[in-house]
Image: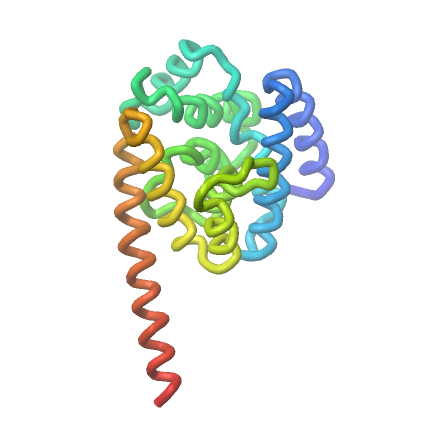
Length: 210
């Protein structure tokens, strides 16, 4: 994608989501874009893809729940989505809506939209960046664990994922709602991965002292 093509599609997306989203959600989206682009630069991936994925990530947030569920079942039948997972439907519905409107966008970008609320094991860098940016963007009101997540986002994406997934799953359970199986699997995966990375880091430090 050339820079001119990127600018053209970004302008179209901005006009589209401005009509679809409430004011507060639109401002949140701009914050996610800002954060995602900064993280993309930090971890040396395509900033244009990060920008577009961030702008599109919540495009279905204010869509009627029945419409969300219909899109989810049509485009993601394998995920097992139903009204009991109401808080994550917009991510998959948004991925479907983005794919319908912008068929030229790569599947990597569509997947980053789809899994930005549940997460999943073996996420790509763009997926992790959109997931994390959604959590730590600057418009978020302060809550326990936010600053810690922001610090880890600059150090290690996998350990940041482990932290956010744990906090999010605990929050969902505290509110007596079911945690989607993808989120449970993701939390277990990144917990193990972050432990392995910490152990490796300790081993390397010991070797360096010899």
